[in-house]
Image (cartoon, rainbow, N blue to C red; front, side, top):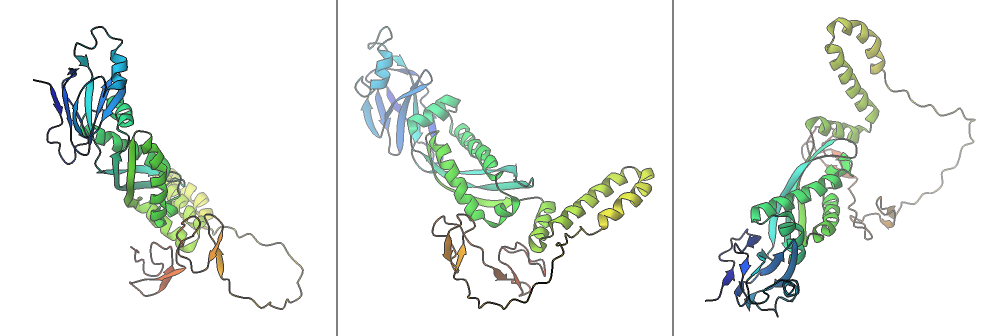
Amino acid sequence: MPQIIEWVNPGPEDIVWRYPNENITWGAQLIVHEYEVAVFFRDGKAYDVLGPGRHTLTTQNLPLLTEVLSRLAGYPTTPFKATVIFVSTKQFRGMFGGRTQSSDLAPLMFRGSYWFRAADPRVFVMEVVGGQGKYTTSEVSEFIRGFINERMIKHLATYDLATAFTRVDEVSFKAKAFLLDEMRRIGLELIDLRFEGIDTTPEYRDRLFWIKQTGAATYVLQTDTLKAVARELGKSPGAAVGAGVVMIPPLLQPPPQVQPAAQQPLPPVQPAASTAPTVKACPQCSKQVPLDALFCPYCGFKFQPAFKKCPSCGRDAPGDAVFCPYCGHRFG
């Protein structure tokens, strides 16, 4: 009776399965179901790939492996050694998440979902399954999750905290574009990627709110410095009084204002008749777009509205505000 090689009853979440017997006989029956492929792996390299159907293993349908085996003694009358790895070509969903640091050194936590499939099973087996020794679905899933997390940490570190919070759609789109080539390199196709949460610590969330609403970054940093000085003085009670008298008053002074140089009075200038602008410059590609455009037609940048109504107090807040400056309501 010929040897039967088949992946029997794979689960809906199973990505790969390795046939347990590496001794393959010529004339064996290889059964590959729909949405599967079988990859022959030997000596660290993936050779022939067979798609759905019932295959009788001969030198004709395993040309790449036959070329290697022809150099061995006893070919082709004896069984040969090879690992048969079944790969599902269905679409799968995975979860990613981790912690990184923004370009302005703020802690950044992120999480989301991604969808993928094996687009090039030979490369996938070479780079991940056989190349990394990940022969089970759980091992492969963990490898892909770590692969995406590592690259997402590096990618998100290029954004400042305000951009990561207020332009989630743009960040998600660029992250997907960045990962497309990275996933293709290991034989996978990234079908979609979505962020489900981006957050930071409460301290940085409050700091972001006040800097964005008041523009007074100097005062916020001055307050942070004052808190740090107070903590250090608290560690040395004996020296705290004298040092505090010298250090704290200057820290409480408002930051110096830069005065313009003295100028001679200029004669009055008659105001020129002005016309309302009809276009605006895209901050990402600098091209001129209609004033009421919501997206840039050249690069896809999403414009933020100038103002939005606070549902709590009813007052107008800046379009990119995360919190209402009048009642503290957090916008969704």
